Image (cartoon, rainbow, N blue to C red; front, side, top):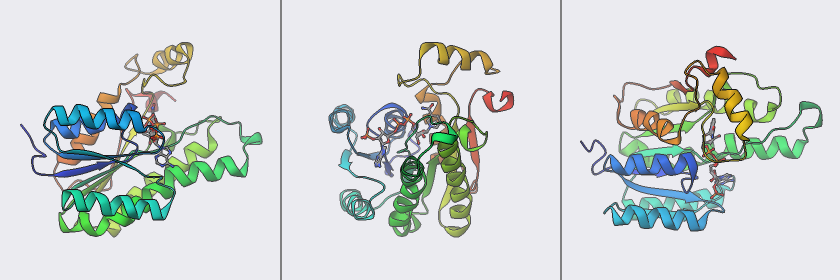
Length: 245
Ligand SMILES: NC(=O)c1ccc[n+]([C@@H]2O[C@H](COP(=O)([O-])OP(=O)(O)OC[C@H]3O[C@@H](n4cnc5c(N)ncnc54)[C@H](OP(=O)(O)O)[C@@H]3O)[C@@H](O)[C@H]2O)c1
């Protein structure tokens, strides 16, 4: 019933939306949960209070995943509080639309800093601790890392790079650490996407709807609890949208 009882997990960017759902799912499976936040301090504190009310050992840390010093400090604090780490979920990410011909180098770099360099820095800082516990790393990729979306070149390429980083880390950190990625399709998180766009994407999706944060969290929980023999996999959670686009 509690497959993660006695285990510790860290979810980057875990205060809201998909990251919050992942933190809740890991906690419901019995894990102690640390989340990082950048701007969403209130939401992060509120999630920690909710988890503590459910008798979950939880903590929130401010951390810019693009900043190596910040990442090292957060890693040290998590390890100090939990005494080790079993599951790292690289969830923090950035998303925006931009036409290829007007995309600036600054937009390109920001995207890569957050979506590719961030997960690399966090995984590198925590790999020694994860190795000690025969742990797992789960990266949040994207269907956009598998399919080319013409108004999201920098996003798609950053997520494709993260998928490759997942494969490289699965090999480089073996045999101690299993590394996989969950690649969501269109997930309704109450973000900026208009109701019309959401309806259009749902209509294109073979399962005729968009996904929920809880459905992405289920896939993360799968990799957090499945056989350690499963590594180097990219699991799309997209209702079949990738088949149709
Ligand atoms: N939503 C979707 O449909 C969808 C589809 C495919 C893939 N994904 C991926 O799934 C993950 C979660 O999706 P989401 O929509 O819930 O993401 P999101 O809200 O866009 O981002 C998650 C969190 O990342 C944090 N973050 C951004 N830049 C950061 C930085 N430099 N350092 C530290 N934290 C940073 C933010 O934390 P603060 O709020 O604290 O600043 C934000 O709350 C992301 O990796 C996303 O790319 C989502």
